[in-house]
Amino acid sequence: MLLLGLIVIAVLIIFNNKLFGRVKYNNKIVQTLHTQQWFQNHWLSGLFLFGINVFLFGATALLLYLLTLIEIPFIHILIMMGAVVVSILVWVSISESWNGTRRNRLKMGFLGSSFYLFLSLLCMYRWITLKPSYPGEGPFMAALGFLFGFVVSSVAFITCFAFTAFSRKTENHNRIV
Image (cartoon, rainbow, N blue to C red; front, side):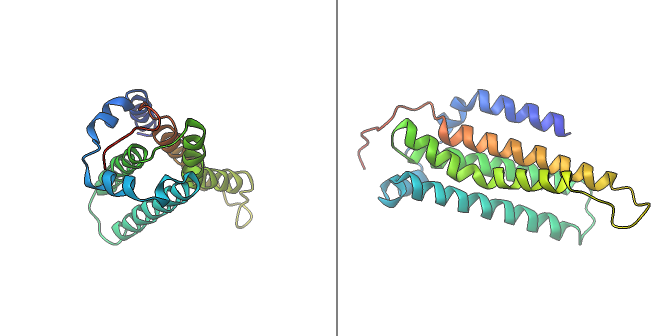
C-alpha cells in the first residue's frame, strides 16, 4: 500500500501540469489570495503555507484518532486518501495564486513545506534513538511505525515543495484583478 502511494504521488508530480490546468485563476480562493498584498511576500505566503500544512495534518490526525472510537473497516484509508487530495488541491491553489520570481518561489515553497521536513527529521530521530521500554521488549513495531512515518512525511515534503516551488506557469503574470 505504501509503495502504491509512492507511485501515485510520483505520477502526480510528473504530470502536475494537468492539475495546474484544473485550478484556474477564476477560482474564488485563488482570486482572493492573489489580491491580498501580504500574500505576494514570499516569507508571509510561506508561513501561511506552513500554517495550512499544520492545520491539514492536525485535522487528519484528529479524524484518524476519532476513527479509533468507532469500528468501521477501511474508512481510515479513505480519510488518508482524501487528505492527500485536499492537500494537493490546496498546494496547487496557493501556487497558482502566488506571483514572484523563481528564487522567491523556491523560498516560499521550502518554508511552507518545511513542516513535513521537521516531521521527517523527528521520525528519523525517534527511530534512531528507539530503545525498549523494559528488558526483553522488542521495539520492532515501533521502529516500523517510525519508518513509515519518515517515508510518508518525506514524500509529503517533496510533494508540497514540488507543487509550490516548481510551477510550470510563467513568472510575474500581469492579470487583471
